[in-house]
Amino acid sequence: MTQLNYDAIIIGGGAAGLSLALHLASSAKVAVITKGALREGATYYAQGGISAVLDAKDSVESHIEDTQLAGAGLCDPDVVRYTVEHGREAIDWLVQCGVDFDRETRPDGSCDFHLTREGGHSHRRVLHAADATGKEIQNSLVSQLKSHPNIDVLEKHIVIDLIIDENHHCQGGYVLDRQNQQVITLASRFTVLASGGAGKVYLYTSNPDVSTGDGIAMAWRAGCRVANMEFIQFHPTCLYHSKAKSFLITEAIRGEGGILKLPDGTRFMPDFHPNAELAPRDVVARAIDHEMKRLGIDCVYLDISHQPADFIRTHFPNVYRKCLEFGIDISQEAIPVVPAAHYTCGGVITDLHGQTDVGNLYAIGETAFTGLHGANRMASNSLLECLVFAKAAGQEITARLNKAYKAPSLPEWDASRVTESHEEILIAHDWDELRRVMWDYVGIVRTDKRLQRAAKRIQVLQKEIDEYYVSHTVNNDSLELRNLVLVAELIVRSAIQRKESRGLHYTLDYPLANKNNLHNTILDPNRP
Image 1 (tube, rainbow, N blue to C red):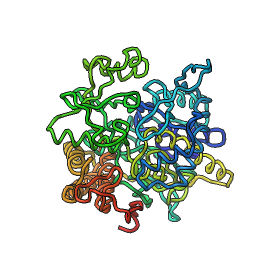
Image 2 (cartoon, rainbow, N blue to C red):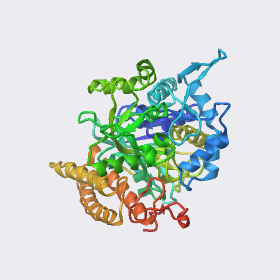
Image 3 (tube, one colour):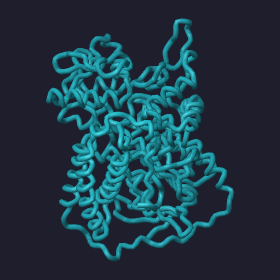
């Protein structure tokens, strides 16, 4: 058994985790733990961009108003203001890190950032690097990471569970080295959950395979409250193709004039919202879902072909190239699209510095519930949240590093009562069933009956998965499934409690919002 000691361990290597590591590197010994390669997280695949007030015609107040409007009454006003007011600072820091955002030459000859507009925004305030903003940010942060000897990166490692002492403080975690199938113990003064969301709990998702809700599940088992898990954002437009998995078609295409159409070419979004294609994502996703169910069709179509071909290839090179791989020339024809699970708006409850209910345990990024997104995340606010709260957490952790600390000798991982599994079919079967149950019963449109059915099936699956976990040697698939089924339970429990339709939670039994329900759905593991 190996024990490694650090000042801080950061679980997750996306924008939130890497930004925090860089903020801490000058004063702390840091470990960044990633389940796969360093570039496999959700940040790397983010296409659209990051929102910030940079245009003279825009304002902080406008960005705040748009965010709160999208959040359907549940955004925390103080958190929204804090995040938005730190937007330009976050952009300046990214530029210092080498992020090369697209720029444009203006009529007066000056050159500045090219800003696009996405759903829910009343102004152009989304910075981007073509249609691969996340890739540019991730690569730049990784490059910065390599210059810091104080940062160790443990790739292809998955955290099994956090280690909590008798005083309800986190002391580190048990980590499975996936390549060597060895469990190591990491002791740390501070532990940070930055492991992203839980899109893989659904059958169809835009998320990468690593998005299995690990941070949320670990925090719950450690005693942290979670909030608003019923609000799962479905991205309206993912490429519909049998071999494309779930390739996201950036919202910026709609921001630059893309039109949603039925198979016969009829435009339908003006019937659902005055902002048509630029309505908030929940509205667009429900509209597409409605039309697909009404007509019994497999997909709808997103058409940008009326724009000049050079404009399309310049602004959306990755989407253009990817679609062309599947025989779709988006400069000549419409793109077949369907909604897919995209973003977990709820998560582990934190304060403005990322601190959770457990001492020395922080959560940032999609794993966390800060209060920024409310009942629906506005486009391109997520990367902004990652950067702002990574810096806030970094400042608090750095301030606390001055206190004396001696790494404890933590108990070893006990595998004396488990055996190797010779039948992985249970994992494969339960993984498939769980994701289908969530898609069929806890998707874009819900009912009480569907939710109750989901709750019963999840309860059965949980028992099977827990029995497997305690009986067999841990592996990546069983750990991810254990986390996913717990997150599924939290989503369903939260959805059952909300007896109204608000933001991303839409139920046919309560189709209207209820002004008496202007509160967060909080679940507490200490109060079943």
